[in-house]
Length: 252
Ligand code: ADP
Ligand code: MG
Image 1 (cartoon, rainbow, N blue to C red):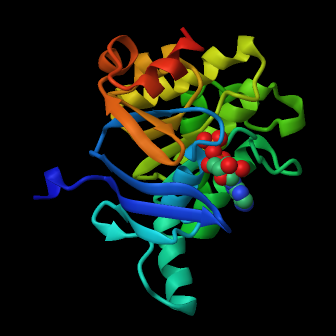
Image 2 (cartoon, rainbow, N blue to C red):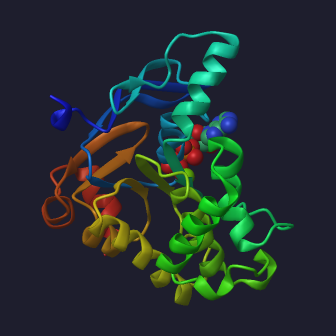
């Protein structure tokens, strides 16, 4: 049973901001180790979907599950706070903007979560951080401050920081959109490496070629619904829906 349980499951997710329906019944299932790329026009609800998965947004209807545990369950007050903090620790999120703490060094940025949220011993957190920073190619930057780093380096620190919590899933929301073009590949390379290690990932991206290379499945959203999803080759070469074709035409 455990092997078949989805890592992330979204059921009939609905979200509105006032009168504006942003998610109109989204269903999504991501298996352990699966990589799903989410594409779609600006305003289609991609960020809202990712933010709803780790409960940065509260759904108006539907369910989100992480590895068999309901994320948006009906607990109240402190019980919910405890629950959601525990669940959030199991999801790493990387945003377009890096949100590193400017007054902390690279390694302090990475060790802070494990030390404060997980109670990890400082030496162990440091060891883990050095390992992760080496993995993202920043071993020599451990004691640098973020202001000394390029955008691509900052984003790689942000990824290492998320990984330091040893999450069950990584959520990337346009992680390379704010980067100069020559810095995009170094960040994409880290995501590809995680893919090779079977990290479960949801990746919102505007880079169709990267999506095709990294994802097991591509999901096209428009107007708050999943219009179409399938293997990258299907979606990119033989999209079935007119809306998907019209969208892809702008990128290919
Ligand atoms: P995407 O990431 O696909 O560009 P978003 O999920 O950011 O789309 O936004 C979907 C829609 O919801 C857009 O019309 C956006 O303006 C609206 N929206 C997003 N966040 C808010 C908010 N906090 N308040 C009001 N409207 C919002
Ligand atoms: Mg967005």
